[in-house]
Amino acid sequence: MPSAAHPVELCSTGALVCFALAAVKGERTLAELAQQFDVHPNQITAWKAQLVGGAAEVFGSEAKAGLVAPAIDVKTLHAKIAELTLTNDFLSGALGKAGLLSAKR
Image (cartoon, rainbow, N blue to C red):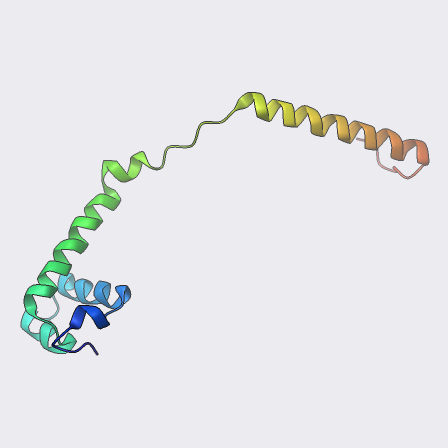
């Protein structure tokens, strides 16, 4: 439990999220939460505001912009496909000549 003198120094990030979520849920008053978590009510209000603001960013347009797929170099992919095709054809021929390739494509 955090001390009244320095609650933030002793709280983990998970605990801070817990405090803010408890405030957002609204199942207890701010005074009750402050007493339960041994922090000042203003601090819980600040954490709640940060949580709500952060949640807006998660679902906002800025977050969606980060979901854009990276550019694909088609030329590099085609070169790799060609390389793997040549390797596959070579190995199929070599194994066929050695009598080790039983299944045909």
